[in-house]
Image (cartoon, rainbow, N blue to C red; front, side):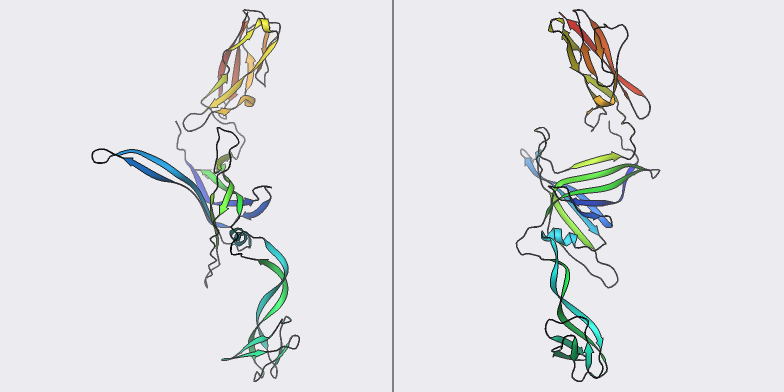
Length: 345
């Protein structure tokens, strides 16, 4: 039975975004405000009979959604939402600056591409510069605000009208702590194909800093085996220490092992499953066990101490032995399973 221990998932996750094909890193988010992982299902009710009781509920349209919000400002999240790359090149930019006039003449910082707009009190003048020098009628000796276009080498992102948002490989990392505040595990949520939603809002406030959000949903990834099937992602509890997992029992197969004396020298490989019970699947722990033959067994039968490979050499009908698999739990206790070995004619 699964126990609800005093462990807690604390604070926010770290987000690692990679190329889904090459696994090359794209974004590393460590200044998140919040991170949310949501799994949803839709239901269709089947009802019938007197008073229309509920007979069955069909669950469908499973979805996995993730949303993260960060306080740092980068081009990365906007690029992912737009589905385009940030390029570096010579671009046209707008400069807005304050300059001091002397007898109506002033110098701007950059070389304007065209005219310069001057804001002088309640009036607006459009003047033609001489390289970087401008002359403002009635400007006298004053400070004025000017705007103009100029060329500069900068990063630029083009938000195209029809390009879809990016599909990336997303991993969220978070800490699991016990009630003594010790980190017990690192929780890893891995989504191999994360479809960015393309919804992006950049909110600016006079009394704060901007925040950026990235949200989207998992796309189905083809499973590695027929049994596994398609998946949205995996959730992994990575222990912070390498102590052995505690299993309630172990099971070694095949059991019994039978050899035929007429077949000559033979081998049989044991497979050992660790059993935790409850909602935990059985785990193959063959390489984590040690093996031995009980005393009194036939000398023609042996087992690899670390491999679990049972061998029969020059065996004859009637040879018997018992092989034992042993696993040591993190608490120091050992658990065993015995496998009888028989040689037939």
